Image (cartoon, rainbow, N blue to C red):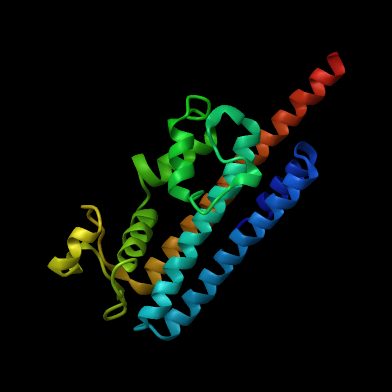
Length: 219
């Protein structure tokens, strides 16, 4: 993950948000960062033991929890910027505040649907979902029901599923791939998505703070 974008977002938050919300954002930030680091560690262990279903499950879980962590950061900042969007108030977030839910709320709200952050999330993971996201979503959702392990140094795709498993995930064409390539693809995409979101959130907070300063000066 781009540490510069991370620092820029926190600096912008310190200027634009109340202290309590800054502290919450910092804690949410730490969770997302920790999940991505844990996914990186799972990747290393999995490459050392390439038949381990447990390590693959852990890798996918950490990657998905990082997306949920990112969504809660997005929820906090976007709620401040667009209080009418129907997002969770910062100190009323529940476990239902997940990537899927926040993405849908932002996309469906007229107040936020055209904003760069919802546009990015929707483009990357829905309308024109990137191959890395489709692979992560496919494998993660499969592991909610079944044990999944690399076979022959490869991650399974749709064609490798037994017939009884195909109804467990939505119809989609996800190809199998080499283990190392698939893990790296997922991690690289997710880190880039997080950095891009942080950049757009920081811009939004900076613009809001500037507008507030302009109004204060005018009055």
